[in-house]
Length: 458
Image (cartoon, rainbow, N blue to C red):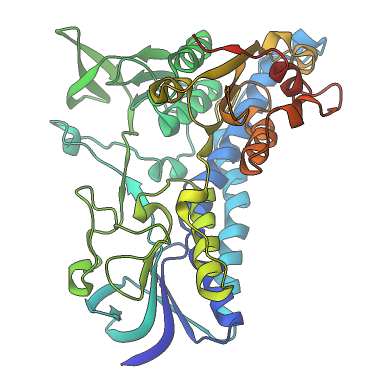
């Protein structure tokens, strides 16, 4: 039995940072990683996908060159092997950097293998047994595979296996019309694939407001993506070199034949083979580790951070989990998950930046509220760049004058959202930003303008 002060299981966004803080506080730390250092974000999530988004945007913009008075000789082509090589070249330094930083960290011992709890405060890895008074679980999540008849008999793809593709699928069928599915849909359409998106809900990205969902569907369809909502996949089968997907919609069954299928129907936590029951760690019905407002599990001295705790499915929420745990344990600064404001982005082009409540959520509260909207075609910076799709929407509490939420679908929406988010954290009235002088020409300069044109939410 090897004793440590702390054990960190998993090297996603929060694990390595927490290990460094613990070591700096004089603790002897064990870090366990079963596969790729850096977790989802570095290897199969943010870093590689946004690199692919950048390549796809370059191809899309090149095809529009004449719109800007630029002449390109001959048709625009995409070299998929070069696209993958660029993606790999971006990912590898990040992954190796995480691995190197931990393996050279004095006071930190790295174990490579699969960790399983064998008792409370005890973990086994590669035949060794480790013990610590504090254990931190940062094991992430993976693509959920639904029980669709025939799916197990076809070579389907997930967000992880998509990272190995160095060719252009002739026809990519995507099961799931939410954040992961839509990013891949637009990327591969811009690379040159035929793309079909099949979504069970009545509209894409159903957690968003209906006007946002419709606007996203409109620009994806305009690019030639076949969007099918209100459609249930009832079967999948191999048919020669093709894959046939059976879809039920409005009581009728039809088929879509493609060359490749990407499953993007939700995520599931990597908790089913950790032996959590041996340590008395409770999970919910979906396998997420249950945690309190300071990320403590049901077992004393054990915390869960990142995607596996069900309190956020983003890199930034995982990083915030690290900050909360480190503040509480090491800084005598009591921080809580409930203090953070919902914020995320959809990285289509144009992107969607989101903060706080949606319009639908505000309406459910029944509180008097104000709203302001602006079409991106009325934003001078967007007009000048020839990127006018989308709109911006801000909601404000009528009485407190604090911003309740915002949806910014348009040029730089994923960046502009932060000026709203920061004001929300400051709990300042919207009039602070309304009276601010922003720089012209930018997208951000229109936020004060919108706040000066608030109207009652009917």
